[in-house]
Image 1 (tube, rainbow, N blue to C red):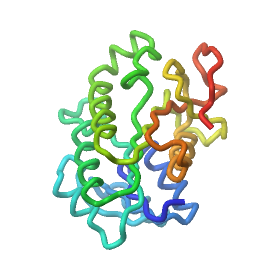
Image 2 (tube, rainbow, N blue to C red):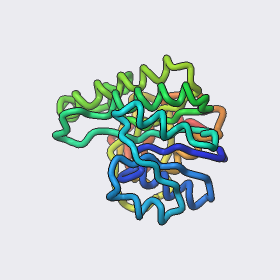
Image 3 (cartoon, rainbow, N blue to C red):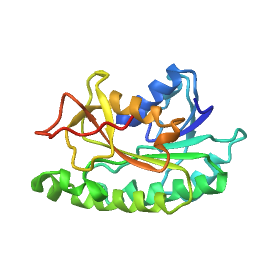
Length: 221
């Protein structure tokens, strides 16, 4: 597995599950945290913590210019409802720019089903609610694809917080929609780190037992 991962978004959700998964594999993880609320938790897993805000490009550049070269960046950042400035695009743009400068080998961006060409997978009501977020996520995806970095984009379905089921799958089928546990997303994301077939791919992530009225689809494997 890649030796040194720079992880952004580790304070909660999928990012925290990725930190758990990687540190359990004894992978070196440097986690960027905007506030100290999750610091003890993340350090307790065995990750190194650096302070910084993804919306501040100087913070990111200084955090990434660590002594040890970074093999891959994983970003799961997204805004919370009601935030005036969302990091979905701007934060990720800063991370992508810094990763290019730092000569990072791979960038994995976690967005969501409904972004970009998977827009038709969502029911109209959900789409209407999520539209402002999805526009920002789409801009981040496009920016990454044009950055020249080796990338994988993972778009999870509806997220749940229970333990991993082991039934998470990836697919290039943009019509697929369903739910998936955050811990299963983390496993699928980490699988893409050294999986050459996943390079420069955009993949949806769902639990094969939690699909929404889905026709059969082809798993990415």
